[in-house]
Length: 362
Image (cartoon, rainbow, N blue to C red; front, side):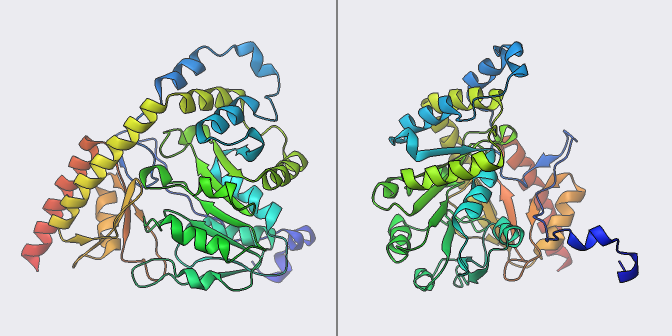
């Protein structure tokens, strides 16, 4: 847009490069493996809660404290309710945390290959930041986070690489940053190993963020939460009540409570995803793919001779959606969500034919 065509008020619009979410489609015939959604439905109690909702209650505002869900989460994770914060998906919780805790002139630190929303929030809230290069195996170099900073953000397991860093690495980073808030984004932790939540009892500057979108199969409900010291949670709530007091709908609160209550279903669903993931990993290897060991509900794969972008387009043309990031160091990788066994069979059926055809041409 030329300078003379810009209206006076347009000069004051805050301009940022937005986050680009994965493609959503209404075509039910598409195999959707691009947004890391859980392929299985949420706990049965979730549907029952929604069916039994009193519609008359919808004319009233929901509980701004989200008390029912906060209490259920506190019970499940063995913390005090004053140590739990709930928001509209983990994106909302993380954005609120960035706004609340990162207000110094020092740059915050996070890896160069990680969740691409982090730099967007920094630009939006005018937070200085520096990215720290992961090593050649996409692993965090913990010593890079020992320097002076305005805060630290670590996704563990990381996205899109799928890599889990041992809890000792996370604790080491927290220990070396006593004067900063350290946020650990655990969107995929339930498919991995040990959570950093127990560390919040030892370190009052550690905030752990999780979501209902992956392991609890409730991406459409938009529920996220954070666990940390009472001082951190109070600060988050103070900003929330200054920004938007009624965050979660009554439907989301009731559904969230039922999802947390059904621990057996939660664990069974995770085990099913992990089993399909491990089976998929073997099949990818047989087809000439390599990838880091996954601790998530997706695999981050690269093929031995077919470019990732070519595969991405070929899959899309055949109604199979996966995620491609045209970014430095990872532009020859595809992030492929774990679907049902039937969906994965369709994916591998296509890949076998396509790769064999390319071999014959080669």
